[in-house]
Length: 391
Image (cartoon, rainbow, N blue to C red; front, side):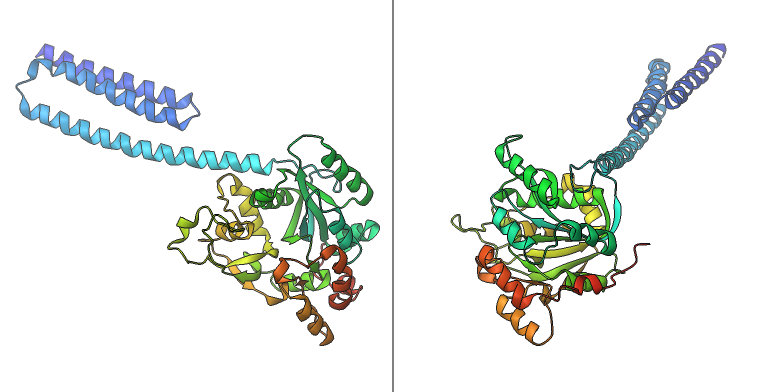
């Protein structure tokens, strides 16, 4: 009798010892993974002792069965705990990624730092090293320069910048030329991105992420540097949707998924879109589109895991699949140059104009001024409009 009592007493003390070790571990650790290990240690500790206690009682089959069932239950409990720990680790990983994204700094000589300022909309005009003449054609037509550009931001909350990354070779002559041009016009938004035609999807992602970190805007707009834009009409159109939380505005299309290797816009991952001959999901054409603040923030927070397809406009549209997003198909975002002239004659103005055959204004360097003359809004339009009060 004394022997059995001693065994039971020892089991009690061992149990207390295991529990004490467990709670001491929890107290002095800050990592969830260690909790799972401590649970495992506790249960192994208990059952190793029980195993030694039952060594001389192998004939007691009922007791052995009970222990086996108990071990299985604990094993399942540990597995469930492991899944919970995995979920916590995933949440911590996402939070860590978010903190890294929020802390991102952008090199922007025009804004003088990375402090966010509240504005109505941020327009990023996509451009390349070789597009100096295109940029000049916009500066001479619809894009303000110098003091007017600064006034547009301060008084109307409209930021317009050429967005560009850097060359593959640091501090190359290409980068220095952009530095010189920016010093003259102060209208660039520099991105931490290696320039290249096949990197447009990555550039778009970087633009929205960097823009969100620099400006607190209601809308973020991407435009190609061979598209004519009426800033007043653009602002007035976006203001109509300002109270909607997640909007994606542009000319929505659904083109064919090209599979031939010789095709210019071939999609290497065509198999993801079903059978040959299928079309893409609806997405805004890449010449110009706008997204609301919540969507730009979504891109910023999730940029490490957002997939990139071959075509930039398809890529952007794919990021919003499965989200509660309102797609707004507005034909005024893609007027052809003949259409914009007819609308102008009728007293209407397009948001943006270009030629579909050229995916922009054909020969834009020489023709942008002409398109501006026949399709442009009054010079006072952007200044007279009252989009909202910043104060």
